[in-house]
Length: 212
Image 1 (cartoon, rainbow, N blue to C red):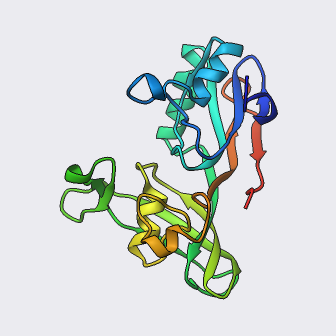
Image 2 (image 1 turned 135 degrees about the vertical axis):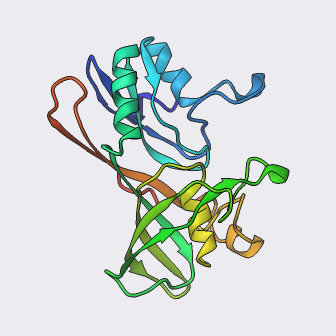
């Protein structure tokens, strides 16, 4: 399958891990023109592969699928119980702090209904949302961050970083035009997954270096 064979990170009888390219849907969208996606490509090779989490179309990186309904449920429960550790890298506008500096963004998020699919910070109706960040590298007018979302809200990392004044470079949904123009794609990559194997309980660690 195009874009899949070279993106296979791991497969066994219980799960598979793929490296999703930016610009490819993780799951099917609405309409016939949005049926090509990473999960559909995977299911052509592994018909029992089922989705347990999602990545935005513009985000690249590690994507986990369970094989069969039981494994899908076990892995979905692990995500819901925050037993899966996820780490992302992003390059954002502006200087966030010195290398090694870290912090936490805790801002409630909700759908911005008039502008769907956008999300927004909503202190009154939003769901609790938490992101840990750490500075990896500081440039003249940008910062590379390691990001660990505690919760998994839609567009959480993108909206949280926008809310603190540091939108992600290349973000077509949330960045102002000048920040959007500074990168050919959204500079956000799912670079690490840590979890217990759903059958054996053994620790699993998967890594994918950011391609930017």
